[in-house]
Length: 473
Image 1 (spheres, rainbow, N blue to C red):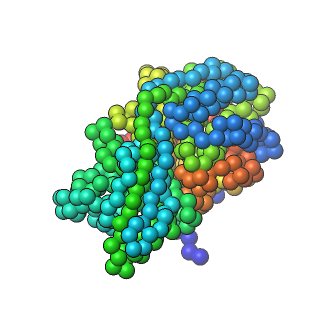
Image 2 (spheres, rainbow, N blue to C red):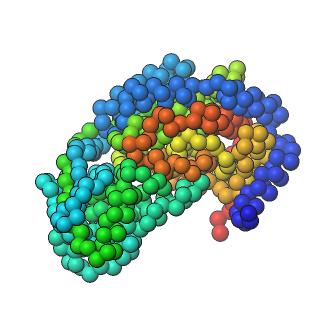
Image 3 (tube, rainbow, N blue to C red):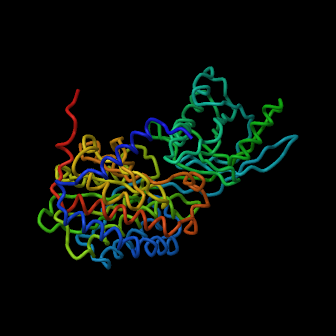
């Protein structure tokens, strides 16, 4: 097998970093990081947290009573684990409730289809029955003549998502979910359907949010399970006229979501803050175990491991369980990351770095540091500590973080990334199969160990990632 140039560069960098001395990082700090790593591998609270969360509260749609109750419970859980300054930060939200939904082919070839409504899509106000027009891309739908879909259902089948370790196959298809309903409405369609965005071939469709346009989602949108999308595409390919009957009672309502925040307060520089992020809300089909109960479990357990190491770090380690990560909003302000940024104001300058765990619970395989840090003394120390648990240093910088910590990145806070193996993540993502039994406790503990060791190295040092940034061109 031939290695890609990117993989060769990353592997060479990792070997260089492990071999080189980590002179600028205090030897005692490195040794303690290794001790924290090994202790977290052997015992941590991650499985306990995610088990209680998913069992007690199940699915936690943004703004729902389940999300609110889970957040109050998580705040108490943090306090019981010794976190300080624990608080709940509320913000207004437009919530969405799925109701009942169905889809079926009608006419000469009647059959039921496995379907879910896209998040924040309006209901159908009674059944919609119309002919389907198929497109193989969003671009093809956008190129359709104005008015050509009047009274019809637009269907995009762009093919199966490409399975990738880093999840790179997701982006090209999720843009269809966001923009598809608006594009269909612009051509006169009465509804929009698409192949659900997932790497599996199960008859279990994937939901996910669609996008508001000028304060509204313009028409009902649905995702078909992969085998059902295949059926509709094959029938159209055989020259059949396909008519669907679609029904949804989905609706929106005014509510609130919230961020849950807790600190391990720094010993000597408490105003220098490291943010560990994940999100509390989930979709309503499963119980949100991998998306993103696992992320909260990993970050909480990592911070707890640091607190239990026998010495508080110099800097403050802050865990934020963000609300409302999954859904779009009419005014684009509903995300918990945006609410957090508005809440801290000018204190964003005191945030040293942030990272996000929102890709399930399978093993971490790569570390990405902020721009300019890849060949630093800190990077050498991190490689020395993480290489023994199978984490290689990447030559690629972490720029954006993720949906929750992304607003911090937007105001200049450096980001780090601990890349997880996402090979099977999009088999489960946003489906009814996102449940606790899909978590491998051993792999989740490896995540906790990686997070705890890395964050300790940052928190008990004076490393300044902002100063390492390359000069602007």
